[in-house]
Length: 535
Ligand code: GLC
Figure 1: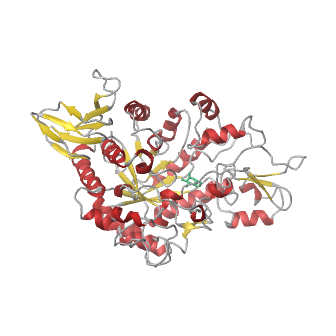
Figure 2: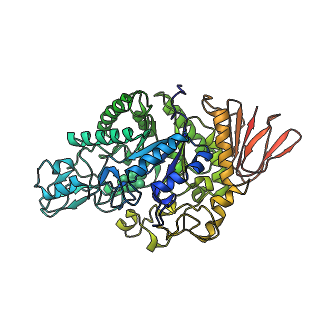
Figure 3: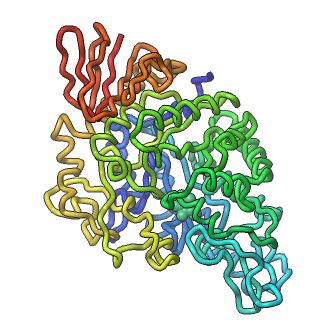
């Protein structure tokens, strides 16, 4: 393992700019707001920041609908603010990862506007997927959008265009050389401005196959792709094994080309991480072959139950699959698209799981607010903004709950996030979570994260593989305890509802999520908690 690469075992902090900190009182976070809080981020002990999109956008999908990928949306500031943010982060030793959105543009992008004004078959239309209607006037195929409803929208002259997401997000045609050139220009633009890497949005979606063929079970496929829809595993696997618009072989050629661009900045160590929801899990390793990208997200922990067997399998599989291509895994408990981990598995459980995961080899992603133990915000339907809420007529509540702005200080909502009205309401009960209160409380989740990340850097990073001590396949066969050692640290996770008497002899405790009772050389690890011991 070459630990010289900064990203190999980096801790990466994801900021959703709209929700982080508002510097100008308009109720939405902005780039200057992030710059003003960099010391806070640095103090957390992370290595890099991934910024969700801040580019020019009508904001139909939280900025993932980009109308100019080489400029900053006025709601977030301007290019100079981006430059100042990047430089200030670098001065503190923090790297910046930008989000690139290559599957689609916004319908407000000049290319799409030009396509609308041009004739069917024109070069302007060929940058997107425009096709004639079927003879009966229906769309070219029966695919369903990931946000609900048909994947096609008809324009005035009768042609349809493809959009895997919202109708305001037309998919780009990656068979068109201009699309390649434009994205290569965008990559260089941000690298030249100083960014250290990219998170690639919907990295598995760029290449489509059989665009004119109906899918045999479009509703089944649509359900199989949704994490919130329960489905028989065999059925789900059957549907996901071949999706005409995901994980096609052609995407890898694109990333091989991009890798050459990254490597051409020979003194910069530019990295990229793929958002690739693919099936079966082994397919994810293709994205991190030596001549492709550097990391691929492992989303398993976003849905895994707090259960020893499940967690063991997810962790083992990710480590061993990545090893087959010489890559290290990535870990994420929350992001802007999923329920926050504290709401999903519980407050205590989420602290314990984070501590357990921080010891693992590879890169860890932390979604801003996770270090405060934030739950999802409770929202009224009238507050919601996610396009998936509207496209499913409210059947899918959407992702706004995870995007409620961060509480910083003070006794009253919006807790210093903004001097105006926050774009999503912040509950009064979030007072207890605010940064100021957690700073003052040595037992807070914030202090837990800081301590753990510092110890991770000191004792764990670059310390090779883990050795399982208790696992569902180890001798002891404990149902609800997982433990491993790595370097000089032993990490024990008690998933059960009762305290676990751990036989570790003579190893002092360095950090834990519950009060560890030590007696007669034995250590009592409370229910639903995790502890690190040092040899
Ligand atoms: C990715 C983003 C998500 C966005 C979608 C469409 O999955 O993470 O927020 O809605 O792509 O761009």
